[in-house]
Length: 182
Image (cartoon, helix red, strand yellow):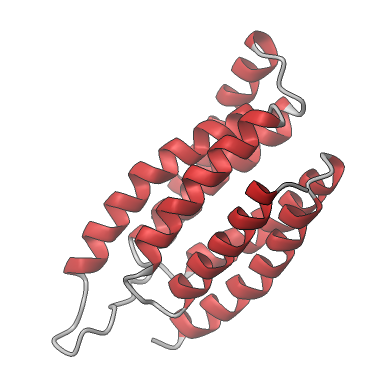
């Protein structure tokens, strides 16, 4: 456990909490969390998750833009239902990404857990895209991904990060409940 990990946990928790509350401040806070975790994942050789943080940074800018435009006159964020076909396409893209990234990481890097890291990264991208598009279903995918992340981070002795992801499961439940009723 390093000071960097402690800072990343605090900033990440705050960012997810702000996202669940549908506050615009979530976007710059989540951007900072990405930068902190980029460095941590580089240090522990979770390269797919490291690259994921860079992609998340782009997705955060995309989400920030969409959320700024997707508000009611009172400033409330408008939640958009996820069409079943879009859900299938997103999950299919996540699976294809998992196989592609996993193969690349297994073949060309010394990644510690190439297949698991790749699958979690790929499905996290789908969840992040759904979050940016303001779909309540994004929280259900985050719950599934975060459960597995807890185990992976515990295995890598990133105990604070594993604890963060356990807390993020609870925040995702809160987010889903709040977004579903919006």
